Length: 199
Image 1 (cartoon, helix red, strand yellow):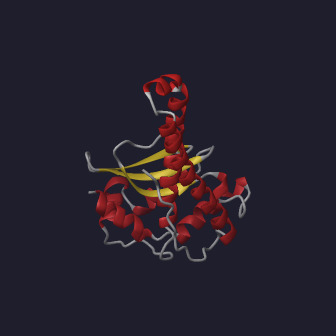
Image 2 (cartoon, rainbow, N blue to C red):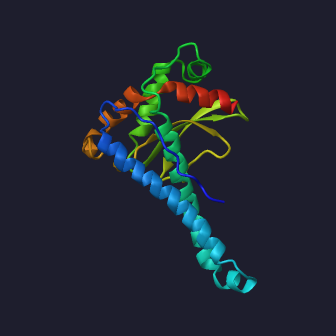
């Protein structure tokens, strides 16, 4: 198995510089390459029962690291896809907006809650999920790249809150400005399509 690095057509953004996007895409590339390298290394350590026994600890640690690299790759794919096609505000008649209103009372109440999660101290991701089993929308703060994902739930919206996402444009005390810029540039129809496909 080999993962293929995706390319994204991202227009010039407001409040998020081309340099930030350029550097951020390099990190995404690194996650993809690392996920592939780890799988190759695991295979190379499993050539015989004797090699597996000798390398059990190393294989286990590589497997543990794989989840970080894989989720780093996948999280960034969700993130960058949300800028493709240019900014596009919510469709008030969409199924996602209706579900948001059903869950939080109003779109504005949901947006405030999501932005609060994005301001969580430390590095991580603010994520909106849909859980098909319970027909519910849920939020989570995902530590690093892989700790805290809601198992079995589909990612609807993903906001990268690692400092590399905004440090070329904003100092840490101004990360709220980055969150506002993210929503100003968001193609909300991507989230709406994910919601429809997750049902």
